[in-house]
Length: 65
Image (cartoon, rainbow, N blue to C red; front, side, top):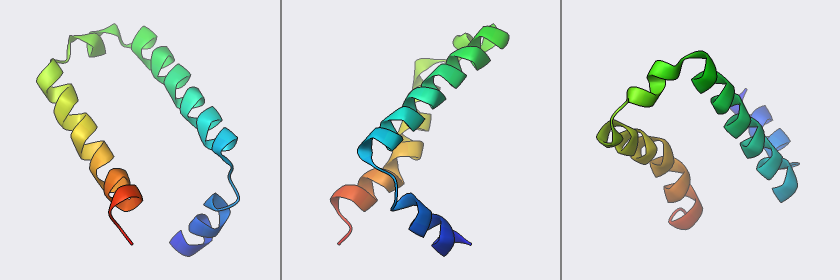
C-alpha cells in the first residue's frame, strides 16, 4: 500500500504540495475556531510537536541519500 502511495506522490508538483499545505493551514484555522481552548497550549509543547513532526521529513530531504 505504501508503495502505491509513493508512486502517486511522485506525480505531484510543487504547486500541488503548496496548495495542500494551504488547505491544511485553513483547516487548522477552522479547528481552532471550533475549539478555541487549543490556543491555551504552551509554547514548549508546540515546539516539541514541531520538532517531532518535522524530524523525519527534514532528515529524508537533507541527509538521506
